[in-house]
Amino acid sequence: MAPKDDKSTKKLWDGRFTEATNEFVEKFTASVDFDYVLAAYDIQGSIAHATMLESVGVISNNELSLMVAGLQEIKAEILSGDFNWQISLEDVHMNIEKTLTDKIGDVGKTLHTGRSRNDQVATDIRLYLRDKIDSISILLSRLQSGITDLAERELDTILPGMTHLQVAQPITFGHHVMAWHAMLDRDYERLMDCRRRVNIMPLGAAALAGTTFPINRQLTADLLGFDGIAENSLDAVSDRDFAIEFASFASILMMHLSRWSEEMILWSSSQFEFIELPDRFCTGSSIMPQKKNPDVPELVRGKSARVFGSLTTLLTLMKGQPLAYNKDNQEDKEPLFDTVKTVEDCLTAFGDMIPAIITKPDNMRAATKKGYATATDLADYLVKKGLPFRDAHDVVGKLVAEGIKLELDLSELDLAIMLKASPLIEENVFDVLTLEGSVNARDHLGGTSPNQVKQAISRARKRLAARQTT
Ligand code: ARG
Image (cartoon, rainbow, N blue to C red):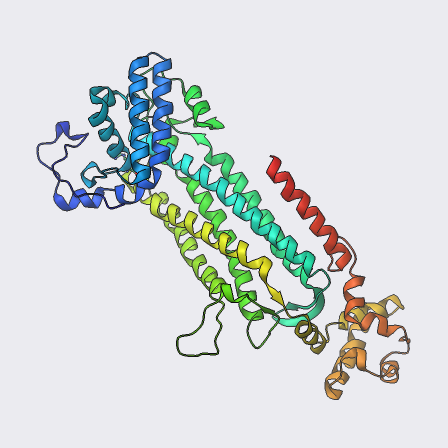
């Protein structure tokens, strides 16, 4: 879409003006080269508004029919790329309104009765965002469903669980990725919560104070599928907190995606070699023939920056504005549109990639063994034999030191060495020192045992299925 720089067009608002707009100012104040994205929503809003005007007797049935037909024609032209966008008409709203008047004559001029661009634009953004929230929620659910498939596939694959990026305790790969799933569950809830506040109709607030026409706001809201009506006209036209809320949701989501990106980048490095990302999600180096770079997670990690930036932009944009509408608000669109696109792209890329992760269980197991990951299990074993936990911690610490000296894992130490550290240790100690024994023992709600992960997956799938029916 490249709007024409057509200086000859008469403005829709220049009745009181005595000179033409400065050429640079015309371009500086125009928003059509980005707000054209709202066109379909603008037309949807206009048709609802006109329908309401007809029902309360402000326009005739014939006028309504002409307007609706004209607006549908404009919509088709926009979709096919034939629409003549003009910078001199400033924004999407006036481009459409002026074209309507060109098409159907003076009747087109009555469309704006009882309405202002201020409530019009606020309505358009809300319709746009509601639509995008719905498509993003589908992408989010798709990714979550991919995670449950991966978790099921790797239900009992042993992975070193880490704290401080050091091997801590054995966990299952399935449990690890279900942690990602849990993060997305909350992101989904935040998105749905945001949708409730987005889906409120500003139309009827007009410029700032309402209108003198006998409008029926409930009818317009019903036609547009809004769940509620903004109850204060000043607030309705001016606040963009719903967009800030969406950007907050998006920032938290991107923070989560960025964390997993970091894990996947580490895991696929030759230092870890826990996973491999399929070739179709990687690229090579133009100079180093051996390279296979994890570009998708790197880009997702990088793109979190622009989303956080947009949140800051929107907050800063809003914070100094007195009531009601100010032209500042025109600046809400680009960060919002960019955030929507970034989130859609990242969820799409991850939705394709996550279920396709190739794991390398032998390497994960070897890394788990290297880190004395079952030390806590040995301490728990001693506690169950009556030793206070702090003393048990000390005994195991000494055995770990011994293991380091002998270059042996705890499960490889002689029973005699163990007995020297504590007479409470018996032959059956080796059962708790195996990696499988360790994960299986954590068999409670939220624990890492394959049995628990299986149940977590089934609960997660039930929640995902319930989303589709609500
Ligand atoms: N393009 C404007 C925006 O995005 C539309 C509203 C303009 N209203 C006005 N009073 N100048 O905010």
